[in-house]
Image 1 (cartoon, rainbow, N blue to C red):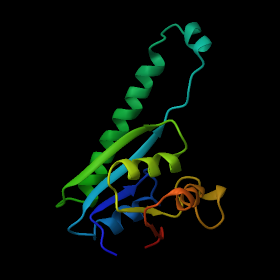
Image 2: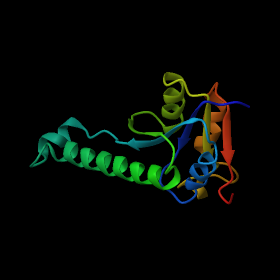
Image 3: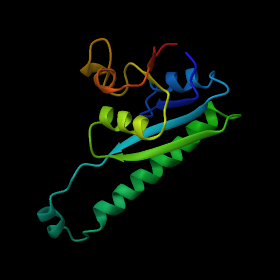
Image 4: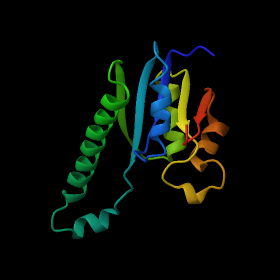
Length: 148
């Protein structure tokens, strides 16, 4: 399987770093590291009652900045000698849909991820996000065992 544009997902869990370590061995490819920040919606009536209505937006901006900074740090650690694109997106859909949409809209050839991330207990063998991605994507998905 020849790939050129590789999408590696991470939720910053130790388990997800196995996919990054594996992708770091894939020399000669364009690597994109993706993290999805789920924002959630605050009801407008609740916003009206807050002393500082901008607090939610400021909090979201802070979370997004911390995620971007952490992603840059991870890119430098796992891909020190490679040109890596890192992307943090704000997700409004579930993570599986966001990952598939990103892959579709950014000429991704292969998605690389681990089978389980933060929610290990929620799934017996393979993560629920991975299961959804396998059902809906048209791209090859490489699932890296977390102990590789």
